[in-house]
Length: 243
Image (cartoon, rainbow, N blue to C red; front, side):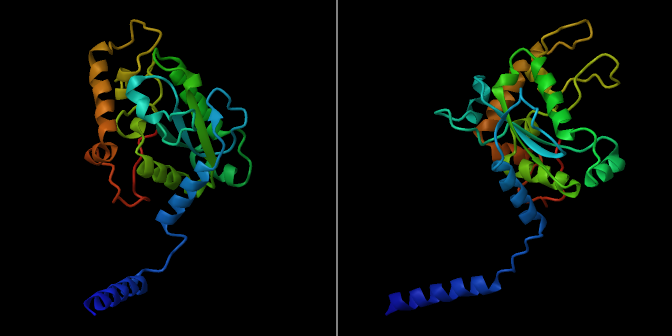
């Protein structure tokens, strides 16, 4: 008898929990973010060296499949497709509000996604320890209003190492004429092929950056939280460092 009463009590508690659940809202930011994330996961995996098919504006995820030891946790075994991105970002048309209006009307003259990914490809090609053929990409064209939220959903779900622990990949490349020549963590970690008189000396900080990456992979969620990326933040307010 005591066992039967315990079972009945447990059933009542489960019933109460179900009855008290809030109704599902498909238009809640969290649910929209999840839907965008799942749609991206279903997109084909492309070579970063082959961007001819990329079109529109929206979000994207970069995947590393190379042999650098400190990125090994990202590389799947047995030639499986990668699922954990090294970086995620967004691409909106140039021209601010005018560009978004043109995109909404189908008048955008260039692919913001293709341009953004081409910039990343160029940056990768100019460092000593990365090759463009070591990267894959998935992209998802989006209605303009959902682009920022889609990027935030990806950052919160995956906490990619280049978004969270090693900032600077999404920045414009260091170069002559830039007002701000301060190198980023990414610049220290991945040193440029061409060294000129204007190139900062990165060697002293390289080992420190490698250590940062390895600490990140030891506990990505904890490191991300320490750096201000919390799972509890409202998805519509999460700020991603991808510019």
